[in-house]
Length: 127
Image (tube, rainbow, N blue to C red; front, side, top):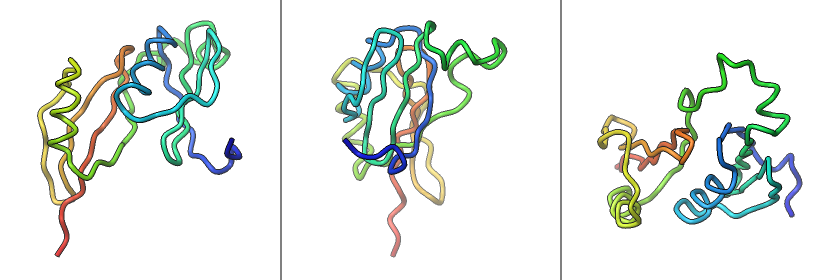
């Protein structure tokens, strides 16, 4: 196990911990670091994603007006965004936006089972 200070951690509130774990590990390359009924954390590279169910202390400490998913999003980088979109659509997932392109690259939004957003991003090619 990697030391906690080697990760950047983000907490997402989820309504079903197992569904969230399954989503992130099956579709986005995360691995389970720790899992309990009310909480799990999954890791992908330097990102430690804390998945807090309704009974977890992280969710209970959150004021109700800030408890809805979708306001923030994690940002995952892919070398082949089109290939990733095709793979995820093939797995039956749907996206929450179309591909948007800008000077920095291209992105599309996906939502986890609780509605938390994930930005899939491909950097623009630099000369």
